[in-house]
Every structure is written in structure tokens, then in C-alpha cells.
Length: 158
Image (tube, rainbow, N blue to C red; front, side):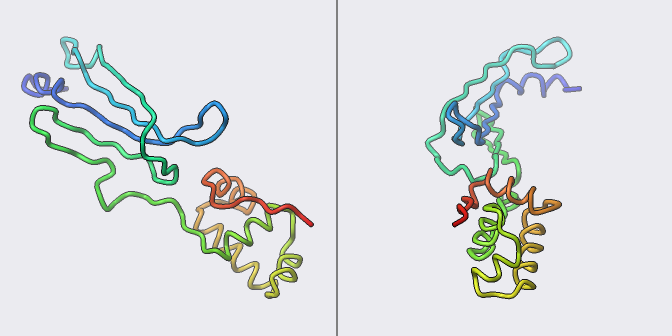
């Protein structure tokens, strides 16, 4: 429960969050949402708030969601997650992206090895590293997740 002083200060704060969402065409866009408490009930809970949602000028849909709490009187700023502690989207090497795209197009490890002039063992090592980096259970989940993040574009079989 908030103390009396905390209740008085709450309307001085605003939460700003930017994140990605899909637009009506299914493409990701970045948006900014601002929320401000306008009135509190007798227990200090927000019962009237204002929320504004707008398209962000930042077009980077790979950046994780970010929030910040701002004291509108003092300008004091709190970042969530704290700066330097953000979880970044997974990074796949060019070769890993190429192999995952080939898997997504329906090729098996032997076919990928022949196409790229590498051993099947090397392909399987790349597969395992992809699964570890994306923190998924299998290559099907890796393909889905990497496609959502736009890390790969499946290659059509020829």
C-alpha cells in the first residue's frame, strides 16, 4: 500500500513504453505508449488514467521493448530494464542464417552439406548452435522464431 506522500507523488509520474506490434497488413511496426495516473481511490490505487498510443519514429523492430518511468516535475528517469542489462535479440552468423533458411526451404542436412560444400557434421553443429542461440527446442521452433524476428527469409527449393 502506498503511503500518503507516495499517493501525492503518483500523479507526477508517467510511464513510457515502446515496443513492436503488427499492423493491419501483418508487418511489424514500433509504437510508443504513454500512461499517466490522473486520480487515485482512497487506498491509493489508480482508478482514472490516461493512455496515449502512437506510431514511433524509431523503425527498428528488432530492438526489445523498453519502458521508462519519468517524474514529470523533476525529470528523474528510471529505465526498465536498466541500461546495459537489456536482452538483445539473438545474433545468428551469416552462415547460420543461410543454413536455417535452407532448412526452412525443406532441405535436410545431407542436401545442405552438398549444396554448401561442407560436411554433414558441420551442418549439424550449426543446427545445434542455432537452437542454443535462439533458445528453442528444435529446428521447427527455430525457423518460426527466426522468421518472426526477420532473421531469415526461407529460400525456395530449386
